[in-house]
Image (tube, rainbow, N blue to C red):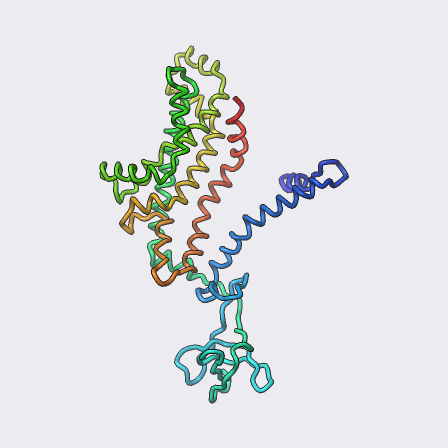
Length: 352
């Protein structure tokens, strides 16, 4: 309840108490517009993932998942779709037998007789609200989606854990030790941000081939562990930790690793949480590098596995939308769990 009142108070806050300024209106428009720009595509994808395959490509599109009503008609082996049509000046529900150009052959589903020809421009399908649960169940049972999900979870978890450890160690050395060339090393690490990914991709792949990690999940994980963004973020945050605290620990005969593990890492938790969120998003959504390294279907990650639903002549949009929407759940949970650290972690990187 307190959180609700806090949110309402934040949204209704104005620049001048009791008065609405132009800046308040622009702020509300910006916040509402930005929220809708992000939220509407997600809602549309979620609702479309529940539509039958034929309804996804229907024009004009519908918001809610609907499907054409199928009826059994005597004399026909397969169910026929039901349509609203005008026959002899009377509005009726007719079953479509076939469609030829602008004409449709239709029969009365209750009293089938000789088909009548109806102009297709004057008919509309009879639809009802339908949830296509098979969009979710089929990939889980028929297309090894759980294997793809397991591989993505493994790659994301292990790569994030190694990223936090490796980048934290590098940031600790660059922020709390003074040695010749420390600034040059830091500048060199940051300068790698300006190198396009496509430039290092071929050499990185040749290294992976040389160590025998092709078509191996470790070949996806290890080259992405060291991150200049992570080193910069953690180093800047560790600079805010007083050196006197570390000196006091050394006086108490604490080892350097103990200082790092028991003092520096706990104090760097907000920045580590921010880096963890970034790392999870990077690894979970990565497509190009796993596509290059992996070749066996049982080793595919989620994003590469989703590409299997796209064929040369057809795209199974109902499966792609369903599994894409389902893949949003893990990263959303991670973000909700760690989002309170984002502001603290990013703000703390510029304090010193």
